[in-house]
Image: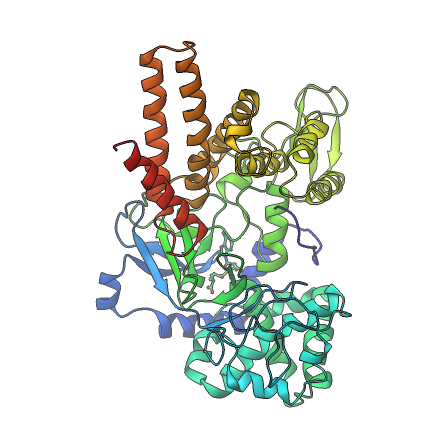
Amino acid sequence: MPGRKKNHHKNNNNSRARHQRGGQQSKDKQEQQDKEQSPSPTEEKELPYRVEHSDIYGRYLVANRQLEAGETLIREEPLAIGPCVSGDPVCLGCYHPVSLKADQYRCPGCAWPLCGSTCAGLKHRHGHTETECQLYAERRAVAGELLTERAGPAEVRDLYELVMIVRILLLRQHDPEQFALIARMESHTEERRQNAVLWRHYEEKVVQRLRVTWQLEDLEAEQVHEVCGILDVNCFEIGQNGAKARTLYPSAFLLAHDCTPNTAHTDDPSSFEILLRTSRRVREREALTLSYAYTLQGTLKRRAFMHEGKLFWCCCRRCSDPRELGTDCSALVCATCRTGSVRAVDPLQQTGDWACDRCAHKMGATEVERQLDRINNDLEDIDVHDIPGLENFLLRYRDVLRPNHYLLLSAKYSLCQIYGRTEGYLLPQMSPEDIARKESYCREFLEIVDVLDPGLTRLRGLIMYELHAPVMVLAQSAFQSGQISRQEFQRRLKEVVKLLQVSRDILLMEPEGSTENAMGQAAADALSKMGC
Ligand SMILES: C[S@@+](CC[C@H](N)C(=O)[O-])C[C@H]1O[C@@H](n2cnc3c(N)ncnc32)[C@H](O)[C@@H]1O
């Protein structure tokens, strides 16, 4: 769901210049690192990509040859892994949710909650290691023992935030080679230092806590800030089937960001490997890109998110276009004339005006942002399984947001998934009108995804799978009641087969054991039942 992060930064449009100024120290580090990490010429020939450098992106990957959709680019294990920064406690071994109740299983050594004594991540390098356990055991009173039902979300968050930082600092001590691979990553430390609010947050919540409360007096503040920067800039958020973790990978971090990227990635639930593929054809010398932000969010929010965490203002084709490549997924209904659309005049001016295309009405970006936050909060208050609640949300905001607005799309996406799967709304229980509604939400959503996240992407696979069912059911009932001809029925069945084939091909690329892979399997089974 969009828009959960708080913005620590003031919005201005200066970051490209600041990025380039980023300090001679950072540039030297980068040049040195470029030399160390660039593959040798023989290695480079075999790889489908090579590392290049630009003043805007820093290091980034480009295709060595034309690449077809679905080609594997990178498959690698994490250099480091740890819990996400969140108020939800997770097992330190496998990153599945745990509770803080008294009966929750806990590590006998350090008292941190774990999913159980047989967790595969215990004493594993991608989980709760003995070194980590020993360090926490010596500080039980400030680490695991504070994690009780009495701890509020902020305290829980503060404790979990430290875990990955401590893991990387331990790596520095115990595995310098592995740590060197992390140290070469961009941290934007100098730019972060200029942001008083952000710097103070890390100084108080991380540096001081580790040094004073956790009695890790030997830690140098500078090193801790550097690690925090590396994590913010380079982490992937991964996880399957309820697990949630953040990870640093040795090469995948090099991909530049684009709001309509040409790669897609997934992760293996047992090894936490990342598997990165092209999602569409990529020309030779084209930059390989992925999206650091949630693709189905509006430009104002995506850019603020990237600036906040990754310290750059995105200026991609989509961000530069007030209509977001024709999707218009940020446009508001004009509150004055009620017919026009209100859009950012220049979306690259983060604090610039928004204007109606039919009347003289104007809004400041801050006002737009406030309105979006309010609507987003309303959406987040609705349970994801609450069909009437989500339908009501669509009704309430249809005169405020344009039909493709990302917040309406977000509600429609939830509805696509729950119509047909929720008790009371299972397909055989649904009225033809509700089935038709599921179909139309799926089609609206797919149209946008085809532009913003095209090709072999998980979102397209999932939505195509959802779409096949209403098309099939409605075609069957229309044919049986004589409303459509045999020819029309066969045309609709052909569409069902196509939807199932594409969703199977996309979703079976997801790792075994994941929900998406199971859906891909279900698509394959449905096709074989249809004799295809
Ligand atoms: C995960 S790192 C990518 C690797 C990085 N370029 C390096 O040399 O280490 C993310 C950083 O790359 C730069 N970057 C990536 N995509 C960008 C884009 N589209 N525009 C500007 N800077 C970008 C930003 O400095 C960002 O903080």
